[in-house]
Length: 379
View 1 (cartoon, one colour):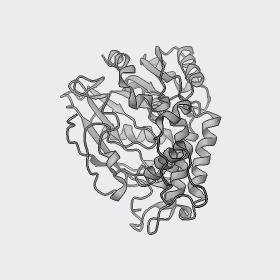
View 2 (cartoon, helix red, strand yellow; view 1 turned 120 degrees about the vertical axis):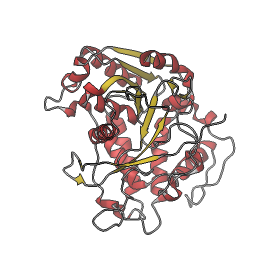
View 3 (cartoon, one colour; view 1 turned 90 degrees about the horizontal axis):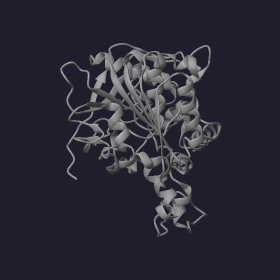
View 4 (cartoon, helix red, strand yellow; view 1 turned 45 degrees about the horizontal axis):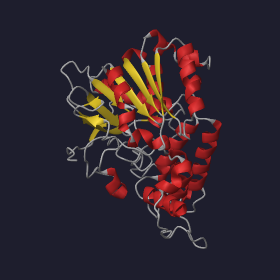
């Protein structure tokens, strides 16, 4: 497949960003990519949100993102949703202009813990504040305003679905439709504990240094361990042995006493170690914490689903929800609860349960299962 060459763009927000934690970032840069042409009326935009460890590079081929050092590895070069985006595809670049933004606190060009703090030009490190899902939605709304874009379609897979939901609840007047793919309205207690374990894995690496490690060796082992913990929820575990490589590899300096004897062990070590060299540990902590703390009901003082989503119902925004029957991140029962709450709140909701052996990663690997409903709601 011949992919078009694309480049990330960078924009400096023209106003400070006030965060829910009480901190204010006076200077914020966002990295984003844009696919397809913006109409003269700027009314054909799809705002796409990426997953926890994703990036703004959703489509095409991008061999380099300036300013992020060695994190842009070979596996980053091809867009993470090439199967869904492009001419004639569900996110059709002949009709729509798709915009995908690297999250605040990320490590692929947006202001984050590795960025220089204006006070001393040294990396923020431990000084970078907590960022919430609501903060992310407001930052992206600010970006759209700066670009002169008013109303948009929202598409959010995985963690991106949480931010898309928050955006729709906070800015319903700006939303034409909302598509949630393998996501939900909160993190379950099981997944909150998993995310807590992942953060601990990084914190307990002696190279973490409280988050101030940018002038020394990063906490590669802690981040690799965090990824291994998290990766269990991304794959369908009953099919893991078939997905894992048949051969048993070495631990690449990760382990001392234990020697991998099964392909599943080697597979997990491989996933963890390669990830540790393409992501920043501080960014991982910020986004994992953001995910674990999210519950859309916290958006309003009433702390109810109906109050939080009142704007979606009032604006008659159509919602499309995909659940994956082998998803361990957002389990089918949680998705059914999400859809039931949407419908009880008076929101027009179309629901599809995807049958797959790919687990949470199905939306990346099986585009044909999602194409028709996406085309229809955008049509």
